[in-house]
Length: 538
Ligand code: FAD
Ligand code: SIN
Image 1 (cartoon, rainbow, N blue to C red):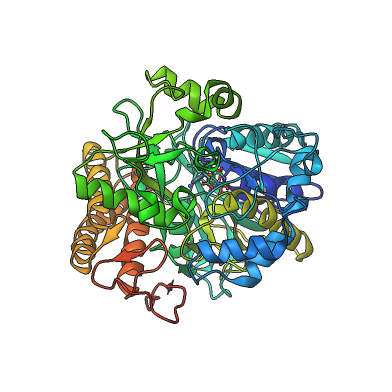
Image 2: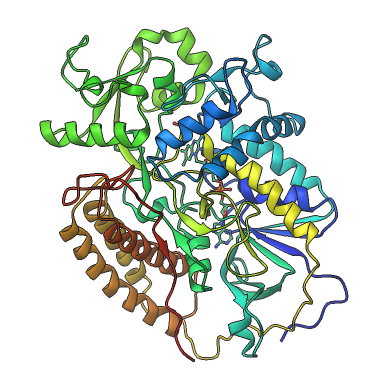
């Protein structure tokens, strides 16, 4: 058991991306906060974000217009209250980031002095951005603040294994979250961290697919931990595939921002020039600026129809000066791979990008378990519905980061319990680590092949069967061997894969990001797919 500390226990925030840092910076005004990051502090989806963050700022814009665009993209499953709540706080969110020193691209004539870009599904220009590296600009500014804050302790290379609940106390306590078990990667020991509240801010689950725009951190840890702790998860079938990731043998994860299409870049079939090879108008009247689910499905359709490895994204007509000044990162990274985007089209394919579902929370980030919160991509607030509108994710992190912190600050701190230590008495070192990497590869490939952009019931059932086998092997491994990061991530990925497939099988229609050949129609009325773990009797 841990000792009762004389100082109040901190709030433990799991994740140092935008969601985690936003929560921590608000909380730290009055509370000690410990922030965990399972890899280096600079790793995560946030620093990779390109296009920008929504701000309803322009004279030509309105809350209603943004809510409408969010709903249109979300294909009937957006919670209007959540969308309005978040849109109404978008100007304040962008202003807060400006105050913290985020160097957004300026426009002296623009609102707040900012240049606003446009992306697919948006009726107007409303994306605040720092050229094409918005996430890094935001993350650098917030991380510097957090590092300088006396109330914030940042622990990199600490991986949360599971949240500690009443079940671990083996006493007849009301359900609650009391802390976290976390693996310190340097000592390879699992430590017990008591907490007055725990915030899951662990990001998405893109690594469950073979091809993804996501960084290595995106293994669905928060979703899996919350699920194992008895919380509901919702809408897991709605995995967003970004239409335009670079297709290149040396670079598997470079996103080519939608903002490029916002400025006029067009999609084209290889081998054709002029307007001949353009195909988007045949799929949607909004062409290249249709919402992502439509563009990704159109590319998938054309690639399969013509037997192609990729399509072209052509920005050559925008000119070298414009491309270099507005998209310097993409220009430089493509140039390093031998592609001059000012004179050559860019080979692109869709890849897994964003989890629209996640841990069910209210607009204060509260999950079903008292003391446990979830914010950012790991959460499900109802904002994204069946397909997220571009640049709404960073906005949700900032807005909910604040409301979550406010809720924790306004709650009476729970008495900290003496918590049981992690028990390693029954385990030994793994005999064959390679089994874990084989299972990783198998899982990611089967998800890509059977649970991709276009689905069928038969393929989903096949996936379910294979995932079940993988899960029993991994459970066996987990029960008998000392844990390490690869094993923990694989365990989380398998839990999430199971939830994605279960949700996809439950949805007997096609809607937003879920397209089933067996159920091509959209039902007149539809609901989120909410899953709750069946509790075992003890
Ligand atoms: P992340 O930023 O991914 O942070 C997760 C953190 O959790 C990391 O610190 C990680 O180490 C930590 N972590 C995870 N598991 C554990 C664990 N078990 N223990 C301890 N720590 C853990 N959205 C937009 O709105 N606009 C954009 O322009 C945009 N562009 C994008 C471009 C790319 C290439 C990608 C991949 C995404 C983009 N998105 C964009 C989506 C957006 O970036 C993410 O949804 C958002 O940054 C998620 O923030 P987060 O804080 O929830 O998670
Ligand atoms: C992009 O820049 O295309 C990504 C934007 C997003 O994911 O919201």
